[in-house]
Length: 225
Image 1 (cartoon, rainbow, N blue to C red):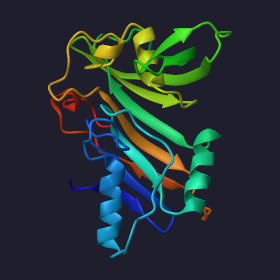
Image 2: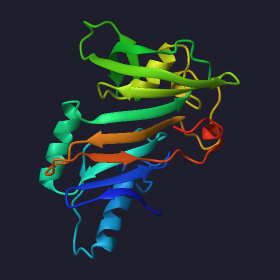
Image 3: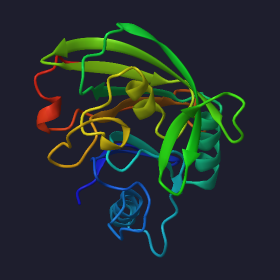
């Protein structure tokens, strides 16, 4: 696959992930974004041997958008710390399968992951293993029984945004796992990591990345973001 490179410097590689591609190798055996990124660096910089590339965050397989890797051990460690400490500013957009009634707000949940089924559910705060999740949301536009929503995760929990929208009665288009009633043609979920701003590992200016909306029909006709 052709890699959509958004940023490349000594310590950071930023790319745009298409929906349906795993960030790291999984049991499917499909080529991953990580493998394609390593091949790009090997080819672009004529590197001999194995290419180092650190995974510092991930997107779910059916989700598209910005993904950042660390090109050095120092870069990976500092980027990972930024994500753990909430220094990374992440903005997503989503299309819901039912209209979102609320115009904006903050959703706070305690989430428990079932690793055997790869699902997450909302539980009571004192549930063993539960983790707090917090998400800001803003409805940008509604049309034809759908809404376009901007999402800003304050925490970084698995499936956090998908569960948050389902809890508001507006599951994401194509998200059969969390309440949508029909799939999208390409089996994606209408969730896109639009932008990411994260402190650069060694420079004073941040790394600012933005991935264009995918070409699929579900993203067409909405106003420019």
